[in-house]
Length: 322
View (cartoon, rainbow, N blue to C red):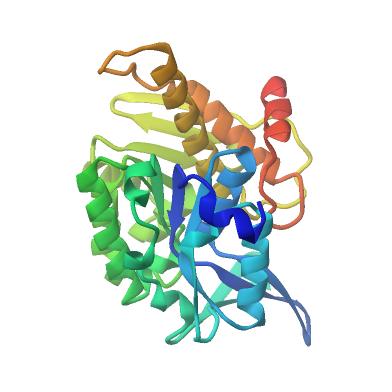
């Protein structure tokens, strides 16, 4: 969709709020490669690629780095009314080691911190089915406080919330209250086994998962397990799905694609249920089918280098193989 038609498009069903940034990746002794990124931004792109009306709600700089993020957001068909520009420095993630990835974030008083939820389009909360939170945005004051307040408001309105902490080394014990608060507000929580180890500072990931679920027993947890696929915990029920056979090119963005796929599948199911029945009590979600779709989305993201959003045709092909 062109910039000129953005203002007349319907308000999005899915919004991902948080950080968009630039990854500076060390590729040689004196060489660096820049890539657009940010976990919450990647989730918005993945959802849009699957076909749901989506937006990234956040602020980016007005320099070259911000221009690249803006252009990539336009190319992804995100609703640009939710993307704010600020005359501040860019947020950078310096990846000084790639195996395993080692990060250092640079962004004192950077553009992401200027995000103003009050400047979003009027009535967007009524149009939204799901709003996603997570990433390092929830570690960065004053942005984190604004996002938590936004999540609390949406929760009070009955809007569905998904949350992916996406552990990074800045999430030490100071992050513990944020983790608990966001888990309590979320309808779906996505974590990996590595996230659990880092967030709870333990090698006992089963105990960490039990603690996380204890924060909000009503939340559904999507647990990603790398090459073993993923699992869903919903109440006292549990499902696990192995990934389809693929040749992995790059796992960057797989987790973001997985949560985007889960939310897309839930939105599709809700739309089909609304069309098929007028009952005020919708049936329970088909979590196994949602999990299969989520795993296929994460697998599709591994077929290309970089955080390239999965295409719906790719996902359907992988579903046929699983």
